[in-house]
Amino acid sequence: MPEAMLLGDLLRQMGISRRAFLKYASYMASLMALPPSVAGVMADGLAKARRQAVIWLSLQECTGCTESLTRSFSPSLEDLIFDFISLDYHHTLQAASGEAAEAARRQSMRENRGKYLVVVDGSVPTADGGVYSVIAGRTNMDMLAETVEHAAAVIAVGTCASFGGLPQADPNPTGAVAITKLVSGKPVINIPGCPPMPQAMAGTITHFLSFGTLPELDALQRPRAFFGETIHDRCYRRSFYERGMFAKSFDDEGARQGWCLYELGCKGPVTYNACASLKWNGGVSFPIQSGHGCIGCSEPRFWDRGGLYRPLSAGTTDVGKVIGIAAAAGAALGAGAAALARQRRASTSAKEA
Amino acid sequence: MEDLNAGPYATRRADAGSGVADAVVHEVARLLRRLAVDPDFADVIDLRSLPMADADRASLRQRLGDGEIDAALNLAGLTRIRDTAYSGVWWARHADADNRCVLEQIIVARVPELLMAHLADIDAAAVRLSLELSRAQGKPEHA
Image (cartoon, rainbow over all chains, first blue to last red; front, top):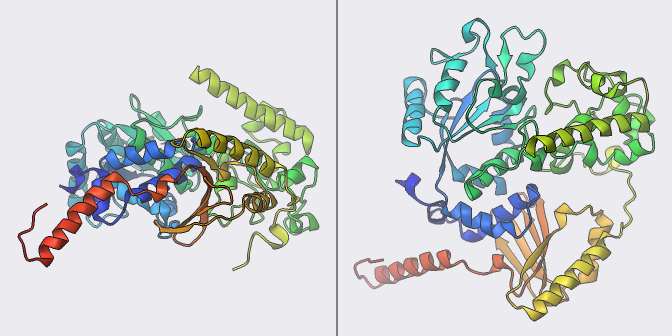
């Protein structure tokens, strides 16, 4: 069976040489801030791995995460990740439906017991017995519990799966919760974002395949390689922030000159993600470069933090408590945000120690 | 489509060199000295990981110059590996299928690993060629 072959042999039959593995591994090592010398080891690890069985559960979600991961790729280097995995169940993408689709999920679970990865996008409604989202007559809670039982690891893709996201926004009528609230005894990796960055997803799976381990995670169980710095840390407009040059409206001279969007509600200083360095749409742009502040979509409770256009200096329901914000601008707030970031790093280190 | 890297939304950060190119050249020199005494030595500098302005990159490229080899590899997008004016120092640019640069590296080695045929590929090629010869000669196929 093709699934039993090593990836190196399997892909060679498809005309993909080990050179391509090495190029892919070099790219991934760079994305994950691994030493370049790791690329050879990573390429060898990939070539000796077998196709990774993946079961993808789409629960209380909008399909934006799937769109991000599939449609954002042109035929390109990152596409190789789809040759490395066997996507055995994904009810949006698979040809099978109904009983045949569910049979495919159960078959994969049976044949890859203890080895398969479960990817989940969407939160899980728990109110009223979980009746607000049902697939094949079964609640999301029920299907998740059954599917993860013999999984090697679970990857929560998107902010809904990672932190509850939009469905969990106040007043949370469906009782939506994050995957980590329902899964225990398994490694759970969060790749938040609305939608998440596809490179983070590909990098996490590649790391698992190459080294047999999960990448280093932060305090919120996010891969540190992609969520180790704030948007603000890598923002090209940061020099304006440092000089206190802020756009006051979306159409003023400051906005036209590309000044900092902090006073227009940019959440970059408290948002950990790689948008500013990797960018979107094949590296073309990211929200701040397109003239809109970061909305902080990869952070918990981003919908309930006081409004997308409210500056951090005006206080937010969560962050404001920590920073103790008055209406200070520029450097003063920068110090508060930086303190918050340091606090998070410190708590991460403490947790890891 | 509007070029978002130009016009009102472009960074106004000064594009003058920051001195990173100097530091990289010193690092390359150090690695090259190691290669000179150990022919099996190889190392890579990931330029993407460095805070380089366009001016830094251009300065670095100019200082390293061009050598004799310019190799193009079609690997899920074009990869070009050029040697520089300093033997043993190579400049690699990796692009995706849309020719967007996804990675740039300076490689210090006698031959970059990417240019060498991999043993597993050679094994498979030997089998394929034998089969091809067998077919051409009308002999029964055997691996």
